[in-house]
Length: 304
Image 1: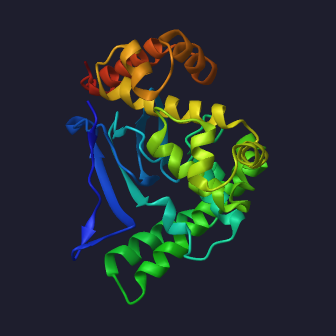
Image 2: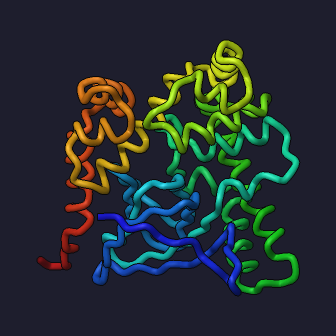
């Protein structure tokens, strides 16, 4: 079962960016499936590690990078020999200034959106001719030394890394980017998204439009123009993300989860889940459980 990792505080202040260096040994793996509200960037220093994210796993090699999205249960284990890596955790909102352009807001939403369309594991060859390896080392140095203005330096470096990721996704023609690039063009979209996040089990477009101070007709038209999907489809995706967490973190039945996140029937929930994940909720839960069992399995010893 995954546990919630609390935010990190330094001198009584919650840090929006954190950096640590982790060393692991295959002979002393200690599974620690967890989740948190930070986006996490893993940069391999030595050896090779397996990064388990939900029902999937990825290889983190020296010089490579893996992205863990906000709220995703994850764990990192070394399967052979030893390995080390840098962990940079940051709140996506740290990339936003108090006065922000609409397009920049959409870019941050692109980072926060957990979508299978986006590449999250980058092999060493993808980074070797970029500034990213040096940026990760610089972040670690700034975090450790805490020189004057180090918080600004951390934000600048994280922004540079994210800019690379964003442009990489664009080069791969990820539909997600074109879908949300213009999301910030209307202020009410921001409010709508925040409203959905807290009221998703039971809400309508009319109620959300009212909360945003616009008419239902105008809201529906502008939401679809900005998001390139209907409001009902967006709400369904939010409900499905919450359902994933319940499938992973609870033993609730499929019917109970469907009701908890706002689907009218279990059959409709299963149908929408299959459309998105290409597997049923039960298959998703079993796959995650199988991954956990593989992760917790003892490592083979040489000569055995």
